[in-house]
Length: 312
Ligand SMILES: C[C@@](CO)(OP(=O)(O)O)[C@H](O)COP(=O)(O)OP(=O)(O)OC[C@H]1O[C@@H](n2ccc(N)nc2=O)[C@H](O)[C@@H]1O
Ligand SMILES: Nc1ncnc2c1ncn2[C@@H]1O[C@H](COP(=O)(O)OP(=O)(O)O)[C@@H](O)[C@H]1O
Image (cartoon, rainbow, N blue to C red; front, side, top):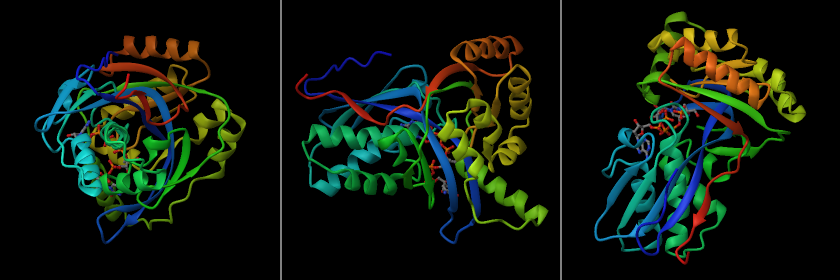
């Protein structure tokens, strides 16, 4: 990925994608959100967000998935930068370059990652000295998934996904991500889950992460992790996109230790026992021609980091 700063004083932040290892979804709340219990893992697919002072607001998309993102004020990175400016009394506008290597609307929180990266980049550019709590508070205003990419690693989240607690995870896990042509809308997938639950009349339990996942992470046991993967949104994603079930089943048949729809989908994540196994699985899935793209990654990785500062 190239993210060479092109404007003087540019700050660049590198930020990872996430996968939900377990995602338990509670009942619909009066505010339109659902209480969650989830475990996020940051994985080595990264966007880079570069900010520089500019006469007016502009977004410059670049990289593998440049085509998919809004270039107006709907861009989450712009919203994040404007929030920092407003909160901190900064009267400046920015050029924001986004090198997009995280699939768009793929259930890997790429937009949220860009928002988190923009918060950190603005803090550096404007020398604001914001602390972790201040950044996390602004992140939560921008979206449920925006706080996690600030810290990365492996973390449990509750509330609507913004309340984080670290999780002990040993070792490195090897992932293959199968990326679809078209994204899925997060609100549409939650709405489909509500519809399916109403139709079946099932009672909705308090969301809770299961101990099998915590044990697998503590032991760094990829096979146990494969068995512990769980996503309450998966049936809703399958209902909207039946081809994803075939993709998940194919990956497991080709030797993945486990496969799961990532968050609200449509990316399907497979955990494998080694880097070599991930390579083998990618080859088999590519031959089966069931998805647009295959990406290998490892996790956990650290969260958003400044990689080029204003004085570089
Ligand atoms: C499903 C998850 C799993 O981690 O991520 P993605 O797979 O989309 O990346 C998240 O819950 C997505 O978080 P994020 O994408 O930040 O959602 P937000 O912008 O806060 O909310 C978008 C919409 O999703 C629904 N939503 C989101 C979070 C939540 N706890 N309950 C919800 O019902 C609501 O309809 C809300 O209006
Ligand atoms: N910087 C951004 N990168 C990606 N998507 C963005 C961005 N800003 C706004 N969006 C919008 O957010 C939606 C969800 O994107 P994304 O965060 O990639 O997916 P998901 O919520 O499935 O993880 C996209 O459809 C896109 O229109």
